Image 1 (cartoon, rainbow, N blue to C red):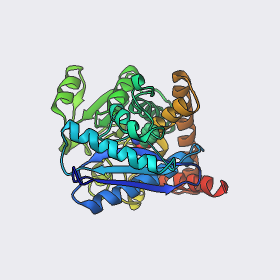
Image 2: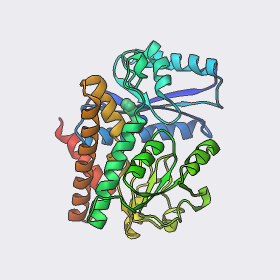
Image 3: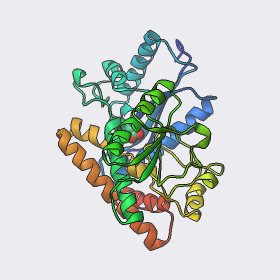
Length: 332
Ligand code: PHE
């Protein structure tokens, strides 16, 4: 994009189950190749994400790699040019929000990208932000993990560390509060930290995140947080979070298993946003229905993954991958 110097990358990983669908991520990368690799990996996860609950969508993702934070008018014009690209693809690619974009941004993109843009604001005719639905699904998955580990899905006095109190993390925190959990959180935004500390939540500084003792560690910020450096530090029983691509490499799933830490594969538990938004906007679900579908589908999927992992003696990541791949193969 010449006027801003941004790169716009749209990766379509699979259209086997339906149109390539995924959020639009806007952030700064060290170089073009880092942005490209991130888009490709994220688009692949979307394929498995939709395959697991048998949704008729394929995997895709877009990254708008901006050289620096853009002023509003430049940003809006860039989003409109991106919308034109979406339109040109004629329905091969559908999008919604992701890290760095909001429902308000979807309104702008849809000016030129209509009707392939989801999760617009309610005043623009959309169903609003997808984050709260993602959070609801992560909450349901945390309950399922507790049931598996402790024999009860109650979160009363269970300690949960939420990494990132953004669009997903902040709603997850309120569900956890209502459920009586003991909540720890981390964020890098000082306003957010102050607000949550004022509500009585315990802030964990970034350098202590991985080593803090807790029942559930919930990554809800960026990907790549589980790796050779962080896994040995972990002091939790399970990892259940909303962030995409939490594992830095496939071998990290084995490292978690060796440490006896239950890993709920990210794409199994973070489908709530896309599921609810597409259900509301394509299938005409009510909000109540969307919430019920998200909770029920994610609980069912995670239980199936845990059962297969135990039965076949494979990691939860491998189990989830098998289920997703089978769906993709069976669909032909
Ligand atoms: N950010 C969502 C995800 O990673 C993508 C999405 C949101 C897709 C809303 C469609 C609608 O799953």
